[in-house]
Length: 105
Image (cartoon, rainbow, N blue to C red; front, side, top):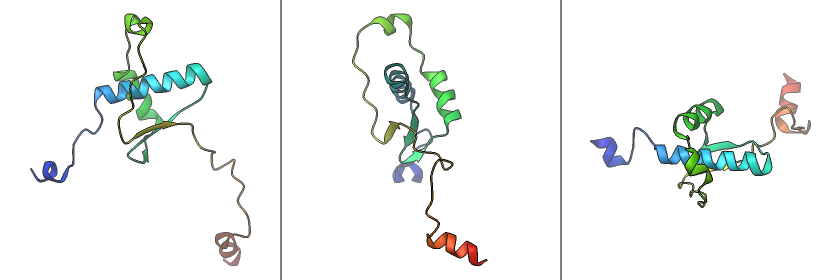
């Protein structure tokens, strides 16, 4: 009872939410060729989970594919965006205090 009172829920994402995410990811891939990352309440959702859940809930029938309909609105707290640069691509300035500290050790 307390969890409900505090606003905690067991399953944050519903089937409709995953369907919206799947539609957005497919559209980005089809139109721009972009890969996508999904953030739920500011936390990145692992790509394996996104793949699994969109495969499970993101099925669209052939009739729905060819029926012109606007893209569904992404629910609040969910962001589908391009992945940022990987750590391997970043060039860190060696004069940062952390690197200076490591040289002392």
